[in-house]
Image 1 (cartoon, helix red, strand yellow):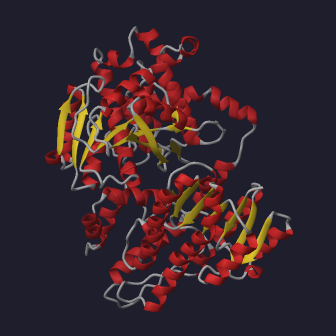
Image 2 (cartoon, one colour):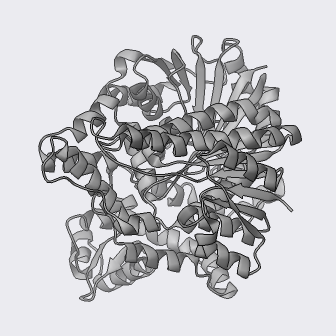
Image 3 (tube, one colour):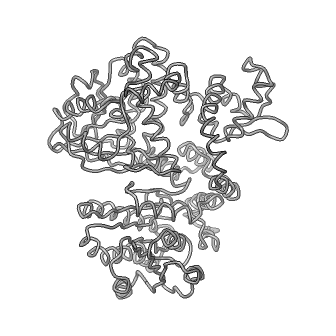
Length: 638
């Protein structure tokens, strides 16, 4: 039986984590300052769970030594114990600052140093440090707390480098605002008179807004369990607010971030902050609505209903395609409208259109009000045209008359290994695009949409500042490279793609303000790639090609990369074994089929990437995953 030592388990995240590990077969040692006072721990013992409460105060060396000696070697350490306190840098008493660092930083260090020798000796195990998204998001009057979380995040990253050769996984779980008893008992204090009132009020507003629709502790517990038991990313944000804030912070330079929070005009601060977040995060959905959606999400329908949903999934795609062509989501941008009104605007008939919208409303794409009008939802926002975060062109590309017919010929691909696309159209996809300019334009818009959405996440998940020159091979219109250069002002970039693609990239790099640091070079990566880079990046390139073609691309990179250079591939990494229920995995495996049916490539496992890298002259140095499931596979010249 595997064992886990978890700190800070009396309530909240720690208690839920201890219960989850125990229910899933772990022998759990649940540390708390006073475990006898925890009703949750005592109830777990009474219920017969494999859970042993132990007295553990991470602030005291002797308490840590005694606890670790009592439990013996463990397979997983979860550092959850922590305290919170907020005040301006000038105003927090030194005693309170020391207490924050003693528990949040030194307590975590004590635990890691006590457990690491046995993990290292056995060459296996995992350490999960539970910090906070505050470690990445600086806001006024929260500096000392954020500094402790940032310190632990930095230690986690350093430790991951040090212990990976020993087979020890390290993860840093970063929750947003979590609904635990501490938040139910108090609200941030806002002084009536203070020179720091503006900053504290804005921080309090953000915190209180997230408390209304906050994440429940069991959601964090699930993230901790997965981080401890599966290969995954080093940084794991948890909660809607954590994801939104992490991406927003990556979009802004430090000066821009400070400028927004220091803006003296309150409404202007709200407008700028909301625009940066691409979400009204200061006024999120209510907790009750969030809870109701969670209940709906976890309730499992009967097997026959699940099967029929799979059978009819193509009908949903066809319905989405139709409303995207009609532009319904844009017509609803200013408010609810009737089917009659929408039919007149789209030159369709009211009754068939109403039936279409009602079918999509059943899937949450639109909402039907009591008076029969239809309005936007979060999902319908992805159907808007020309709006940041839209996936309209991506939908039209996959569901249109060029790609869609190939799926009807999938059996040909399964029997022959050849693309169904070539059977339908007489040539492969990229060759076909050269003679169908309309589809090529849709394809390029789809790639731009997906690039704009994922670029900020990549920048937030990987540190590019150590590279002087970054070459984006097959970089399209330059959205990713522009985001990287924006985040690394000292770096220069080279954008490399086919001539007609590079022409479309010129206005993008100019608009993003990086044209003076970004050289545009045309060519084919099957022939050569530009020299002069320290890092060579490829996003959604390798998965387009079979092993032979992908090896040619990698060998061309190997021919010019310096001995200390880095190859960084951004592609989905499939697990060796598939399990049901993971939405990201469902998308990844279906995209693998799309590669089979419509292109000539595939989505690969880590073992397949390792073999491919070796064939191309590289060794696989590291692999991590972004919050959305995109793999970051780093190679070094062999």
